[in-house]
Length: 204
Image (tube, rainbow, N blue to C red; front, top):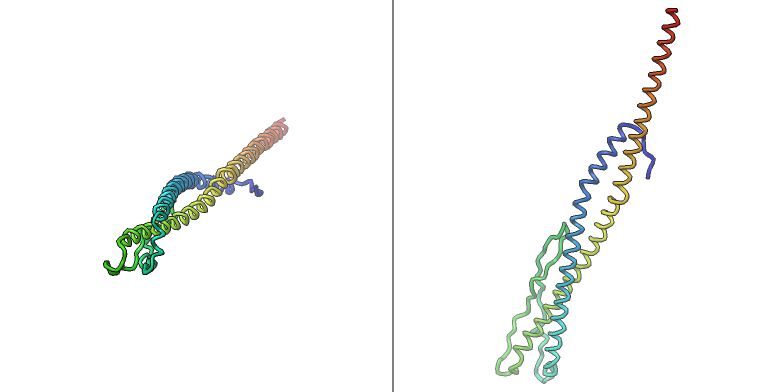
């Protein structure tokens, strides 16, 4: 704790600081709670997406051997053109939200390609969408955890340092000013007695 001035001006400054800390602390605590809740939501979401990814990979694995058939070049039909995103704000933190994936138009001869191709394209595109969504959720979790770390540090700073320091400074200044006032009253009584004694001596 820095050395404080034991003055009425300093007392006012410390009281103002304490009011400011006590006003900001609940806002920071609310932000911390919101971030914690959003992290839990995002973690649950990514667990669901990873489960869906595992199931999709398993389903694709059952027919993936067909992709080796001659004349089947599926890559161009499942290549993503653009990841479509939106945004949301959680407790003052901007996050990118997955909305979808745009793919190149599929144009192929239905008579020259195998019957299973439509289903394969749909399944692989579904997997690509899941993978893109997982990337964005992971990014959101990293951002939220960093913001939570900073917010928690600020909450701790206010709770454990700033507010106790301001309260202690106010207490010390009030004690000092109280002592000074008591001393002043004591000195004034002594001075008064001396004056009265001097007056009595003159009268006698």
